[in-house]
Image (cartoon, rainbow, N blue to C red; front, side, top):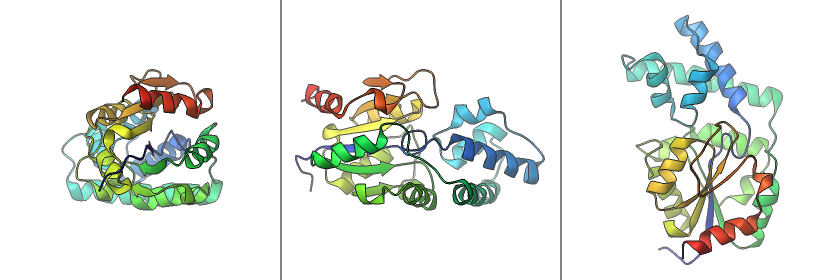
Length: 221
């Protein structure tokens, strides 16, 4: 049952944490070792935010079988988690303040990520923010990746919040497209892309205030 509550739905990579370098290094090492091929940073950045299946098929070609994709992704994710354990992670500027203010205002919060659940849990635990979230949605919870709105709608359902009362914070065009399709307002953070078509766009979350999110949601009423 949906309520009259408000919610912030957070993408993870590039929004909560700057994990791009970890992902890129893990993919390069995996593709070099297994496929004897490489991936440019431009190709990686273009597909950042997609699920592993879509990312690999876009980057390496659609002749990859599902078994091959799963094999590569499994090796890459193990390396990614190893890098997190070795080097640790930090929240991006402004995130902690937003998490605190959203909680203080009584808004609900969720993570909605294209990443596997083990990655989502590893990241939120690495930066000690699990307690802020009422729900976490990952790749295993949906059948379609971004830009499909399924991941955001699943988060809204878990939170019990009407989609029109949700604000998504995203760093990727496919994420913003999905948020719009879900009927949600969207704040774009220019962490990994030079341009985003959000309802509000900032270079970093610390450039915006939670009051702006309140105004954004009220403007949709």
